[in-house]
Length: 165
Ligand code: HEM
Image (tube, rainbow, N blue to C red; front, side, top):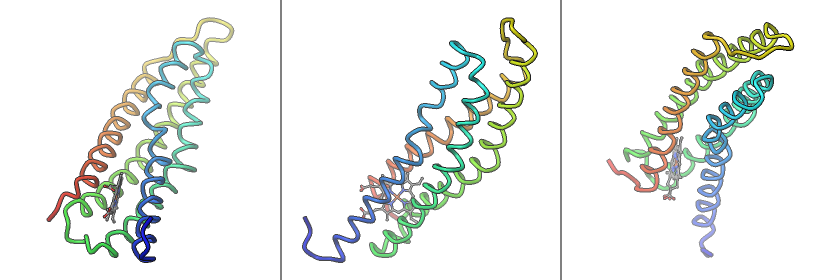
């Protein structure tokens, strides 16, 4: 354990920064599995899965992203890292992730919920066929979600390597 209080505060904030990364982004890597299992084994649950998805994005990912940013600002200031590339990359990553979650993922998940709800209602007691509108929305969610996951992984790599200026 460090004895210098400033150093130990830095390490606590670093731990908070990493915890926020895990809490905010951990679940997103499981989304494709959730969507596939719901569609294959219980199509009636597909609208609920998308409701869970955008609720998680609002209640967990957005606040988590804010905590990643605030802790990152403290770390960059205390460590004098502002001119390093990994910090500028991290800032850009937070902006891109926030924009894609707010402007693409949440609205697309809501539209997917509605489209799947219509398909479930149209099937009545019969077999549910998820239509082309739903499948197109799912493709967009998967494509943008994969991009976000890759961005998070590359950012972790740059942070861990402390890629410099
Ligand atoms: C999606 C965005 C981000 C992710 C996934 C992320 C992830 C990480 C991880 C995993 C570490 C630990 C690396 C290690 O200890 O070797 C770290 C460290 C760090 N992060 Fe981030 N970060 C993000 C955004 C930011 C932002 C926006 C800033 C600054 C404004 C920032 C500043 C820092 C600093 C300065 C450190 C290094 C602390 C040290 O010297 O050990 N990060 N980040």
